[in-house]
Image (cartoon, rainbow, N blue to C red; front, side):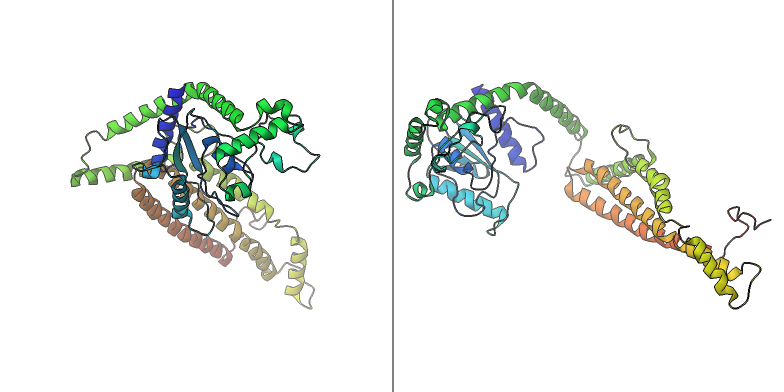
Length: 424
């Protein structure tokens, strides 16, 4: 199992060097907790060295992936400057601060890009968040219920630790003295001495090591399967570029044309519904656009409530058209006024329908462009050009819709079958 831990570390380093989110869920233990809960102190106690930045407010502003490895000599090594081995842990702290500020600046910014650090350790242990600051509780109170897993039960229970106080840190109290004081605290405290053998940093180290080992053992089969699957996929992709000469101008042009044509082909398939693989989980592409026309647009028309005040408006229109006279027939002016007012209401849902379709087309563009992930500049340009074209078409389509509605407003076809009784 010790060899497997080293293998997981190597995979973590390789994925970290890519500067991307991990495509594999590697076995690992995370330290989580509220600000100033004592996460940094727990890490330092486990490592046995004082090496993390200190201060007020948010100090840890980037994830820290800490690998504790077995080594005959004591040193620390960062993935971003692997050629340098640190033996002065004040320099380790300074490097963490400098690397944090390189991405986040000095104004308390945060980043999701991790810092990878390997530190010497005689046992290859791992870490996790625990109950901290037990020594700061008021007299007469204790955390027995929590540590006995009775108050807020957890599957794996709780382990209590005692970290250095701020005074200890300022006074440069070393970790070994801190561990001795922690041991003395649990052995002498009336609430904890009966469970002292299950409390403290040394016990936490033992538990963490066992948990990580078990986790690796459990996830190894699925991890191996995922790696093999990705390896086959990469080998297939490499085979496609086997005869490709990157320095040949004609080859570059041909490859570019092939990728653009494939993008156009994928886009058409997404719209027409003739793709190689049919999504069974959700609607996509042309099916979503079809739903806009068949469901969303009719729903928007229904919501307009054409007839809510229509009878009252018709009455006012007829009376106002007759003036002081009493009319026998409905005046054309009253009829046209009422009908045109209803036709104008079609503008808003029609334009909304156009915007929804354009939005779906942009979504299809982004999805089809995902295959060009290996060529970020090409992908960006294709997305920009095609999306710009879609937006231009959207503007022209909206103009056509407005023109059509204006045409209907200019001439009302009373011979249309919808006008019951007028034609005959």
